[in-house]
Image 1 (cartoon, rainbow, N blue to C red):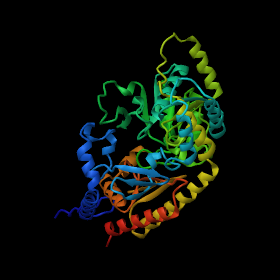
Image 2: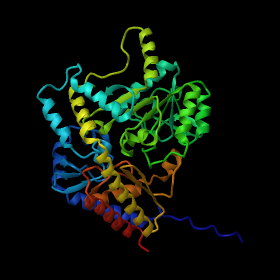
Image 3: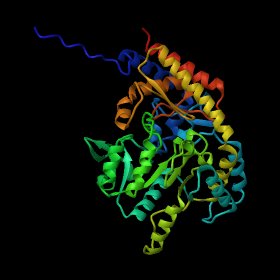
Image 4: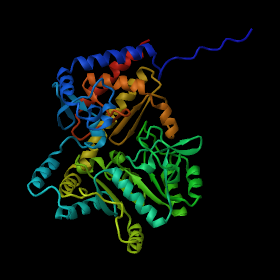
Length: 462
Protein backbone atom coordinates (compact mmCIF):
# COMPACT_ATOMS: atom_id res chain seq x y z
CA UNK A 1 0.00 0.00 0.00
CA UNK A 2 1.33 3.41 -0.97
CA UNK A 3 2.19 5.67 1.91
CA UNK A 4 -0.33 8.49 2.33
CA UNK A 5 1.03 11.89 1.48
CA UNK A 6 0.78 14.53 4.23
CA UNK A 7 -1.92 17.13 3.71
CA UNK A 8 -0.35 20.47 2.70
CA UNK A 9 -0.60 23.13 5.39
CA UNK A 10 -3.06 25.70 4.00
CA UNK A 11 -2.00 28.47 6.34
CA UNK A 12 -0.75 31.78 4.96
CA UNK A 13 2.16 33.21 6.97
CA UNK A 14 1.01 30.96 9.81
CA UNK A 15 -2.64 32.09 9.61
CA UNK A 16 -5.64 29.93 8.81
CA UNK A 17 -7.21 31.21 5.55
CA UNK A 18 -10.72 31.44 6.99
CA UNK A 19 -9.52 33.69 9.80
CA UNK A 20 -7.68 35.94 7.37
CA UNK A 21 -10.70 36.16 5.09
CA UNK A 22 -13.03 36.96 7.99
CA UNK A 23 -10.75 39.72 9.25
CA UNK A 24 -10.19 41.23 5.80
CA UNK A 25 -13.92 41.24 4.96
CA UNK A 26 -15.01 42.73 8.28
CA UNK A 27 -12.33 45.44 8.34
CA UNK A 28 -13.03 46.50 4.73
CA UNK A 29 -16.73 46.88 5.55
CA UNK A 30 -15.87 48.80 8.72
CA UNK A 31 -13.69 51.25 6.81
CA UNK A 32 -16.29 51.84 4.10
CA UNK A 33 -19.19 52.28 6.55
CA UNK A 34 -17.29 54.75 8.72
CA UNK A 35 -16.41 57.20 5.92
CA UNK A 36 -19.60 58.45 4.23
CA UNK A 37 -18.17 61.93 3.53
CA UNK A 38 -15.12 60.47 1.81
CA UNK A 39 -17.20 58.10 -0.26
CA UNK A 40 -19.55 60.92 -1.34
CA UNK A 41 -16.69 63.28 -2.19
CA UNK A 42 -14.97 60.64 -4.33
CA UNK A 43 -18.20 59.86 -6.12
CA UNK A 44 -18.77 63.54 -6.89
CA UNK A 45 -15.25 64.69 -7.71
CA UNK A 46 -12.97 61.88 -8.87
CA UNK A 47 -14.37 61.27 -12.35
CA UNK A 48 -11.92 63.64 -14.05
CA UNK A 49 -8.86 61.71 -12.83
CA UNK A 50 -7.60 58.64 -14.62
CA UNK A 51 -8.85 55.74 -12.48
CA UNK A 52 -10.21 58.30 -10.01
CA UNK A 53 -6.93 59.40 -8.40
CA UNK A 54 -4.18 61.96 -9.19
CA UNK A 55 -1.45 59.29 -9.12
CA UNK A 56 -2.17 55.65 -9.96
CA UNK A 57 -0.45 54.28 -6.84
CA UNK A 58 -3.00 56.05 -4.65
CA UNK A 59 -5.22 53.10 -5.53
CA UNK A 60 -2.62 50.68 -4.20
CA UNK A 61 -3.65 51.26 -0.58
CA UNK A 62 -5.64 48.22 0.58
CA UNK A 63 -8.77 50.09 1.71
CA UNK A 64 -11.97 49.79 -0.38
CA UNK A 65 -11.46 53.38 -1.55
CA UNK A 66 -8.78 56.02 -0.92
CA UNK A 67 -8.78 58.03 2.27
CA UNK A 68 -9.04 61.80 1.73
CA UNK A 69 -6.78 63.82 4.02
CA UNK A 70 -8.07 67.09 5.44
CA UNK A 71 -5.03 68.03 7.52
CA UNK A 72 -1.62 66.76 8.54
CA UNK A 73 0.38 68.03 11.47
CA UNK A 74 3.31 66.53 13.33
CA UNK A 75 2.84 62.75 13.24
CA UNK A 76 -0.92 62.73 12.75
CA UNK A 77 -3.50 63.04 9.99
CA UNK A 78 -7.13 64.05 10.06
CA UNK A 79 -9.28 62.63 7.28
CA UNK A 80 -12.35 64.13 5.64
CA UNK A 81 -14.66 62.26 8.00
CA UNK A 82 -12.90 63.72 11.03
CA UNK A 83 -10.92 60.71 12.17
CA UNK A 84 -7.58 61.41 13.82
CA UNK A 85 -4.93 58.95 12.64
CA UNK A 86 -1.43 58.31 13.95
CA UNK A 87 0.79 58.50 10.88
CA UNK A 88 3.64 56.02 10.72
CA UNK A 89 3.80 56.17 6.91
CA UNK A 90 4.81 59.84 6.86
CA UNK A 91 4.55 60.12 3.11
CA UNK A 92 6.75 57.03 2.71
CA UNK A 93 9.69 59.06 4.10
CA UNK A 94 8.82 62.43 2.52
CA UNK A 95 7.62 63.67 5.92
CA UNK A 96 10.00 61.60 8.04
CA UNK A 97 10.63 64.56 10.33
CA UNK A 98 6.91 65.19 10.75
CA UNK A 99 4.36 67.06 8.67
CA UNK A 100 5.19 70.72 8.05
CA UNK A 101 8.08 71.19 10.51
CA UNK A 102 7.87 74.74 11.87
CA UNK A 103 11.22 75.94 10.41
CA UNK A 104 10.24 74.66 6.97
CA UNK A 105 6.76 76.18 7.10
CA UNK A 106 8.35 79.50 8.12
CA UNK A 107 10.85 79.29 5.24
CA UNK A 108 8.01 78.64 2.76
CA UNK A 109 6.04 81.66 3.95
CA UNK A 110 9.11 83.89 3.74
CA UNK A 111 10.25 82.73 0.30
CA UNK A 112 6.72 82.89 -1.11
CA UNK A 113 6.92 86.69 -0.81
CA UNK A 114 10.07 86.78 -2.96
CA UNK A 115 9.26 84.47 -5.87
CA UNK A 116 8.89 80.76 -6.44
CA UNK A 117 11.16 80.04 -9.41
CA UNK A 118 13.49 82.04 -11.65
CA UNK A 119 16.29 79.73 -12.85
CA UNK A 120 18.95 81.59 -10.88
CA UNK A 121 20.67 80.80 -7.57
CA UNK A 122 20.20 82.62 -4.28
CA UNK A 123 22.23 83.15 -1.13
CA UNK A 124 20.14 80.38 0.42
CA UNK A 125 21.50 78.04 -2.26
CA UNK A 126 25.06 78.80 -1.19
CA UNK A 127 24.17 78.27 2.45
CA UNK A 128 22.42 75.00 1.63
CA UNK A 129 25.47 73.67 -0.23
CA UNK A 130 27.63 74.33 2.82
CA UNK A 131 25.11 72.58 5.07
CA UNK A 132 24.92 69.60 2.69
CA UNK A 133 28.67 69.18 2.92
CA UNK A 134 28.62 69.44 6.70
CA UNK A 135 25.84 66.89 6.95
CA UNK A 136 26.73 64.32 4.28
CA UNK A 137 30.38 64.81 3.37
CA UNK A 138 32.70 66.53 0.90
CA UNK A 139 30.74 66.11 -2.31
CA UNK A 140 30.23 68.48 -5.22
CA UNK A 141 26.47 68.97 -5.21
CA UNK A 142 23.64 69.27 -7.70
CA UNK A 143 19.92 69.67 -6.98
CA UNK A 144 17.01 67.79 -8.54
CA UNK A 145 13.30 67.57 -7.86
CA UNK A 146 13.09 63.83 -7.14
CA UNK A 147 15.49 61.04 -6.29
CA UNK A 148 14.45 59.43 -9.57
CA UNK A 149 15.91 62.42 -11.41
CA UNK A 150 19.00 62.45 -9.20
CA UNK A 151 19.72 58.77 -9.84
CA UNK A 152 19.14 59.19 -13.56
CA UNK A 153 21.57 62.11 -13.74
CA UNK A 154 24.15 60.31 -11.60
CA UNK A 155 24.09 57.38 -14.00
CA UNK A 156 24.72 59.72 -16.94
CA UNK A 157 27.82 61.03 -15.20
CA UNK A 158 29.04 57.51 -14.41
CA UNK A 159 28.64 56.43 -18.02
CA UNK A 160 30.31 59.60 -19.25
CA UNK A 161 33.46 59.20 -17.14
CA UNK A 162 33.83 55.45 -17.64
CA UNK A 163 32.69 55.11 -21.25
CA UNK A 164 30.75 52.00 -20.23
CA UNK A 165 27.07 51.23 -20.89
CA UNK A 166 25.69 49.32 -17.91
CA UNK A 167 24.57 49.88 -14.34
CA UNK A 168 24.71 47.06 -11.82
CA UNK A 169 21.67 46.92 -9.53
CA UNK A 170 20.36 44.39 -7.04
CA UNK A 171 17.35 42.14 -7.52
CA UNK A 172 14.34 43.72 -5.80
CA UNK A 173 15.87 47.19 -5.66
CA UNK A 174 14.00 50.45 -6.12
CA UNK A 175 15.62 53.69 -7.22
CA UNK A 176 12.55 55.53 -8.43
CA UNK A 177 11.29 55.19 -11.98
CA UNK A 178 14.73 55.09 -13.61
CA UNK A 179 14.25 52.82 -16.63
CA UNK A 180 17.63 51.14 -16.28
CA UNK A 181 16.89 49.97 -12.74
CA UNK A 182 13.51 48.41 -13.59
CA UNK A 183 15.04 44.95 -13.98
CA UNK A 184 14.86 41.65 -12.16
CA UNK A 185 16.88 38.46 -11.94
CA UNK A 186 15.13 35.43 -13.46
CA UNK A 187 16.90 32.09 -13.81
CA UNK A 188 20.22 33.90 -13.61
CA UNK A 189 19.35 36.36 -16.37
CA UNK A 190 18.60 40.09 -16.24
CA UNK A 191 15.10 40.82 -17.53
CA UNK A 192 12.70 43.76 -17.52
CA UNK A 193 10.40 43.65 -14.53
CA UNK A 194 6.98 42.25 -15.32
CA UNK A 195 4.25 44.88 -15.41
CA UNK A 196 6.21 47.79 -16.88
CA UNK A 197 3.90 49.99 -18.94
CA UNK A 198 4.83 50.59 -22.57
CA UNK A 199 8.26 49.01 -22.25
CA UNK A 200 9.96 48.67 -25.64
CA UNK A 201 13.74 48.68 -25.10
CA UNK A 202 15.78 45.69 -23.96
CA UNK A 203 16.85 46.74 -20.47
CA UNK A 204 19.41 43.95 -20.28
CA UNK A 205 21.53 46.01 -22.68
CA UNK A 206 21.91 48.79 -20.10
CA UNK A 207 21.64 46.98 -16.76
CA UNK A 208 22.92 43.90 -14.99
CA UNK A 209 21.00 42.51 -12.04
CA UNK A 210 22.47 40.33 -9.27
CA UNK A 211 21.40 39.40 -5.76
CA UNK A 212 22.12 41.66 -2.78
CA UNK A 213 24.87 40.34 -0.47
CA UNK A 214 26.40 38.27 -3.31
CA UNK A 215 29.89 39.72 -3.77
CA UNK A 216 30.93 36.88 -6.05
CA UNK A 217 28.14 37.78 -8.48
CA UNK A 218 29.12 41.45 -8.28
CA UNK A 219 32.71 40.60 -9.11
CA UNK A 220 31.69 38.42 -12.04
CA UNK A 221 29.54 41.21 -13.45
CA UNK A 222 32.30 43.79 -13.05
CA UNK A 223 34.80 41.50 -14.75
CA UNK A 224 32.84 41.92 -17.99
CA UNK A 225 34.21 45.46 -18.29
CA UNK A 226 30.71 46.75 -19.13
CA UNK A 227 29.68 48.15 -15.74
CA UNK A 228 29.85 51.92 -15.38
CA UNK A 229 28.31 52.07 -11.90
CA UNK A 230 27.03 50.07 -8.98
CA UNK A 231 23.81 51.71 -7.78
CA UNK A 232 22.57 50.50 -4.41
CA UNK A 233 20.75 51.35 -1.26
CA UNK A 234 22.78 50.53 1.86
CA UNK A 235 19.81 48.43 3.03
CA UNK A 236 17.23 47.04 0.62
CA UNK A 237 13.92 48.71 1.53
CA UNK A 238 11.56 48.20 -1.38
CA UNK A 239 9.94 44.91 -0.36
CA UNK A 240 10.74 43.43 3.04
CA UNK A 241 13.94 45.03 4.36
CA UNK A 242 17.19 43.17 3.74
CA UNK A 243 20.24 44.11 5.80
CA UNK A 244 23.76 43.91 4.38
CA UNK A 245 26.01 41.09 5.49
CA UNK A 246 29.07 42.12 7.51
CA UNK A 247 31.72 43.27 5.05
CA UNK A 248 29.33 43.58 2.12
CA UNK A 249 29.71 47.33 1.66
CA UNK A 250 33.47 47.20 2.14
CA UNK A 251 33.50 44.52 -0.54
CA UNK A 252 31.48 46.70 -2.92
CA UNK A 253 33.90 49.57 -2.39
CA UNK A 254 36.92 47.38 -3.05
CA UNK A 255 35.43 45.76 -6.15
CA UNK A 256 34.28 49.08 -7.62
CA UNK A 257 37.77 50.53 -7.16
CA UNK A 258 39.55 47.52 -8.64
CA UNK A 259 37.28 47.36 -11.69
CA UNK A 260 36.97 51.11 -12.32
CA UNK A 261 33.23 51.37 -11.62
CA UNK A 262 31.51 54.29 -9.91
CA UNK A 263 29.87 53.41 -6.58
CA UNK A 264 26.57 55.28 -6.09
CA UNK A 265 24.82 55.09 -2.72
CA UNK A 266 21.11 55.97 -2.76
CA UNK A 267 20.09 57.03 0.75
CA UNK A 268 16.51 58.08 -0.06
CA UNK A 269 15.07 55.60 2.47
CA UNK A 270 18.12 54.82 4.61
CA UNK A 271 18.40 58.46 5.62
CA UNK A 272 16.41 57.02 8.55
CA UNK A 273 19.65 55.41 9.79
CA UNK A 274 20.90 58.46 11.65
CA UNK A 275 22.51 61.85 11.15
CA UNK A 276 24.20 61.83 7.74
CA UNK A 277 22.40 58.66 6.69
CA UNK A 278 23.72 55.11 6.65
CA UNK A 279 26.82 56.36 4.85
CA UNK A 280 27.89 58.53 7.79
CA UNK A 281 26.72 56.18 10.53
CA UNK A 282 28.54 53.16 9.05
CA UNK A 283 31.48 54.88 7.36
CA UNK A 284 30.69 54.05 3.73
CA UNK A 285 32.85 55.64 1.00
CA UNK A 286 30.76 56.18 -2.15
CA UNK A 287 31.85 58.03 -5.29
CA UNK A 288 28.37 59.51 -5.59
CA UNK A 289 25.70 60.13 -2.98
CA UNK A 290 21.94 60.54 -3.56
CA UNK A 291 19.15 61.46 -1.17
CA UNK A 292 15.65 62.79 -1.74
CA UNK A 293 12.17 62.77 -0.18
CA UNK A 294 12.66 64.23 3.32
CA UNK A 295 15.82 66.25 2.68
CA UNK A 296 13.86 69.50 2.34
CA UNK A 297 11.18 68.69 4.89
CA UNK A 298 8.69 67.40 2.31
CA UNK A 299 9.19 70.04 -0.39
CA UNK A 300 9.94 68.01 -3.58
CA UNK A 301 13.74 68.05 -3.56
CA UNK A 302 16.62 65.66 -4.08
CA UNK A 303 20.37 66.15 -3.97
CA UNK A 304 23.17 64.27 -5.65
CA UNK A 305 26.86 64.78 -5.17
CA UNK A 306 30.18 63.42 -6.36
CA UNK A 307 33.66 63.33 -4.91
CA UNK A 308 36.20 65.94 -5.98
CA UNK A 309 38.09 63.33 -7.99
CA UNK A 310 34.98 62.26 -9.88
CA UNK A 311 34.04 65.90 -10.41
CA UNK A 312 37.43 66.50 -12.06
CA UNK A 313 36.94 63.51 -14.32
CA UNK A 314 33.50 64.71 -15.30
CA UNK A 315 34.77 68.25 -15.93
CA UNK A 316 37.37 66.84 -18.34
CA UNK A 317 34.67 64.88 -20.15
CA UNK A 318 32.31 67.86 -20.20
CA UNK A 319 34.95 70.13 -21.73
CA UNK A 320 35.30 67.78 -24.71
CA UNK A 321 31.71 66.81 -25.43
CA UNK A 322 29.81 68.45 -28.31
CA UNK A 323 27.60 71.42 -27.53
CA UNK A 324 23.95 70.54 -26.91
CA UNK A 325 21.53 69.22 -24.34
CA UNK A 326 23.13 67.12 -21.62
CA UNK A 327 20.00 65.14 -20.82
CA UNK A 328 20.26 66.33 -17.21
CA UNK A 329 18.21 68.94 -15.44
CA UNK A 330 14.58 70.09 -15.36
CA UNK A 331 13.33 73.68 -15.42
CA UNK A 332 11.85 73.74 -11.92
CA UNK A 333 14.79 72.01 -10.25
CA UNK A 334 17.03 74.06 -7.95
CA UNK A 335 14.33 76.68 -7.47
CA UNK A 336 14.56 79.14 -4.57
CA UNK A 337 11.74 77.48 -2.62
CA UNK A 338 13.68 74.22 -2.59
CA UNK A 339 16.76 75.94 -1.22
CA UNK A 340 14.79 77.79 1.45
CA UNK A 341 13.33 74.49 2.65
CA UNK A 342 16.60 72.60 2.25
CA UNK A 343 18.49 75.13 4.37
CA UNK A 344 15.79 75.13 7.05
CA UNK A 345 15.69 71.33 7.20
CA UNK A 346 19.44 70.80 7.35
CA UNK A 347 20.01 73.55 9.90
CA UNK A 348 17.01 73.18 12.20
CA UNK A 349 15.10 69.94 11.55
CA UNK A 350 17.56 67.19 10.59
CA UNK A 351 19.50 67.40 13.85
CA UNK A 352 21.28 65.02 16.20
CA UNK A 353 18.61 65.71 18.82
CA UNK A 354 15.83 64.82 16.37
CA UNK A 355 17.51 61.57 15.39
CA UNK A 356 18.07 60.62 19.03
CA UNK A 357 14.36 60.99 19.70
CA UNK A 358 13.50 59.03 16.56
CA UNK A 359 15.91 56.21 17.44
CA UNK A 360 14.48 55.91 20.95
CA UNK A 361 10.91 55.73 19.67
CA UNK A 362 11.76 53.28 16.89
CA UNK A 363 13.56 51.00 19.33
CA UNK A 364 10.45 51.00 21.52
CA UNK A 365 8.27 50.19 18.52
CA UNK A 366 10.52 47.37 17.29
CA UNK A 367 10.75 45.84 20.76
CA UNK A 368 6.97 46.01 21.22
CA UNK A 369 6.16 44.45 17.85
CA UNK A 370 8.73 41.69 18.43
CA UNK A 371 7.20 40.98 21.82
CA UNK A 372 3.72 40.63 20.26
CA UNK A 373 5.02 38.34 17.50
CA UNK A 374 6.75 36.12 20.07
CA UNK A 375 3.68 36.01 22.33
CA UNK A 376 1.53 34.73 19.48
CA UNK A 377 4.26 32.42 18.16
CA UNK A 378 3.86 33.94 14.72
CA UNK A 379 6.53 32.87 12.18
CA UNK A 380 7.39 36.54 11.56
CA UNK A 381 10.24 38.91 12.43
CA UNK A 382 11.02 42.60 12.84
CA UNK A 383 13.82 44.64 11.23
CA UNK A 384 14.88 48.15 12.24
CA UNK A 385 17.15 50.64 10.47
CA UNK A 386 17.37 53.70 12.66
CA UNK A 387 13.94 55.34 12.69
CA UNK A 388 12.52 52.80 10.19
CA UNK A 389 10.85 49.63 11.47
CA UNK A 390 9.26 46.79 9.53
CA UNK A 391 7.43 43.65 10.57
CA UNK A 392 7.83 40.89 8.00
CA UNK A 393 5.26 38.11 7.76
CA UNK A 394 7.89 35.38 7.38
CA UNK A 395 10.88 34.06 9.33
CA UNK A 396 14.14 35.95 8.98
CA UNK A 397 16.58 37.42 8.54
CA UNK A 398 16.38 37.81 4.77
CA UNK A 399 19.53 37.98 2.65
CA UNK A 400 18.47 39.07 -0.82
CA UNK A 401 15.68 40.21 -3.10
CA UNK A 402 14.52 36.71 -4.00
CA UNK A 403 13.99 35.89 -0.33
CA UNK A 404 12.28 39.25 0.22
CA UNK A 405 9.86 38.58 -2.64
CA UNK A 406 8.97 35.20 -1.17
CA UNK A 407 8.46 36.73 2.28
CA UNK A 408 6.03 39.32 0.92
CA UNK A 409 2.46 38.29 1.83
CA UNK A 410 0.02 40.65 0.05
CA UNK A 411 -3.18 39.10 1.44
CA UNK A 412 -2.00 39.23 5.02
CA UNK A 413 -0.50 42.70 4.68
CA UNK A 414 -3.62 44.19 3.08
CA UNK A 415 -5.84 42.88 5.87
CA UNK A 416 -3.43 44.08 8.54
CA UNK A 417 -3.09 47.55 7.04
CA UNK A 418 -6.84 48.11 6.88
CA UNK A 419 -7.34 46.72 10.38
CA UNK A 420 -4.60 48.99 11.75
CA UNK A 421 -6.13 52.00 10.02
CA UNK A 422 -9.51 51.21 11.54
CA UNK A 423 -7.73 51.36 14.90
CA UNK A 424 -6.21 54.75 14.10
CA UNK A 425 -2.77 53.74 12.80
CA UNK A 426 -1.48 54.30 9.24
CA UNK A 427 1.58 52.45 7.92
CA UNK A 428 3.22 52.47 4.48
CA UNK A 429 0.98 50.85 1.84
CA UNK A 430 3.48 48.93 -0.28
CA UNK A 431 5.10 46.96 2.55
CA UNK A 432 4.94 46.88 6.36
CA UNK A 433 7.28 49.77 7.06
CA UNK A 434 6.78 52.33 9.79
CA UNK A 435 8.68 55.49 10.57
CA UNK A 436 9.05 57.27 13.88
CA UNK A 437 9.43 61.03 13.54
CA UNK A 438 10.62 63.57 16.13
CA UNK A 439 6.95 64.48 16.54
CA UNK A 440 5.80 60.90 17.24
CA UNK A 441 4.61 60.47 20.82
CA UNK A 442 5.13 57.45 23.05
CA UNK A 443 1.36 57.02 23.33
CA UNK A 444 1.13 56.75 19.52
CA UNK A 445 3.79 54.03 19.48
CA UNK A 446 2.05 52.14 22.27
CA UNK A 447 -1.32 52.48 20.51
CA UNK A 448 0.15 50.91 17.37
CA UNK A 449 1.66 48.03 19.37
CA UNK A 450 -1.68 47.46 21.13
CA UNK A 451 -3.57 47.49 17.82
CA UNK A 452 -1.08 45.03 16.32
CA UNK A 453 -1.54 42.77 19.35
CA UNK A 454 -5.34 42.91 19.07
CA UNK A 455 -5.22 41.91 15.41
CA UNK A 456 -2.72 39.08 15.91
CA UNK A 457 -4.77 37.80 18.86
CA UNK A 458 -7.62 37.18 16.43
CA UNK A 459 -5.47 35.81 13.63
CA UNK A 460 -3.44 33.40 15.76
CA UNK A 461 -6.08 32.35 18.29
CA UNK A 462 -5.68 28.68 19.23
